[in-house]
Image 1 (spheres, rainbow, N blue to C red):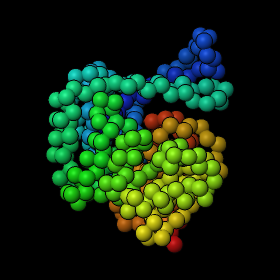
Image 2: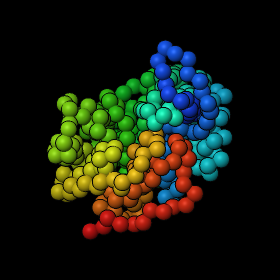
Image 3: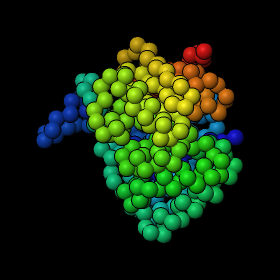
Image 4: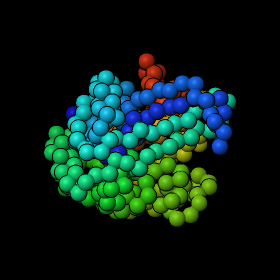
Length: 306
């Protein structure tokens, strides 16, 4: 059965490669690469790669929206499209040849009309009848109210769907009490939710337990180069998984790859320890490839079970 990934704010990702990014000065772009991007699309492509059956729901518009549709279908990901009046955004990623940090520029459009705001949620409700798991992935468009995910989680739980939530800010804070099955904050997002800086693994574990008490569910914390943490307060489960030692070549979409592997383990009935182990392995694999590029073959071995 398909897992439905809801990507309400998808994008075309555009990578510009420069020698070294210099503020104010002209920066020569050596190459440009474009591909379907945004958190939801990243989750869908990695879920398909690990052997799952993703289906995408995306609102799109304009020429960039058509580009996005063509790209997603080329990756053989089943797609439900909701048409928008305004054009889909194009995110710009600046990659430095000298190994410096990547820069990301994300537009705030498209803006939904009042009619589109109503109709997109109606269209989404029609898509969930044949799925068991729904992933709400990525930031909300600025024109949708911050309560959108909270309303969706409540409605989907009434339909007995397993809901995975991966967002941040006010939409996350408002949706968490509606009790999604699993939430996936990263370091910064969990610190924001806690309202204070979190520094140590014990800090993250303590706050993850507090969040799990509110959601009554699983909390998966992606800790970047430190690995990941999986917690469930009611089940007295708390496990940490470090990352393999690799040279990181990319950081875009790594958390999405991790989430895809965790959800796949879930739907296959594996143990939570295996969810976490496979999630960290797949996330680490994503760091070895350019953004939007997947390995030709799967090399991850199953492990981490108790």
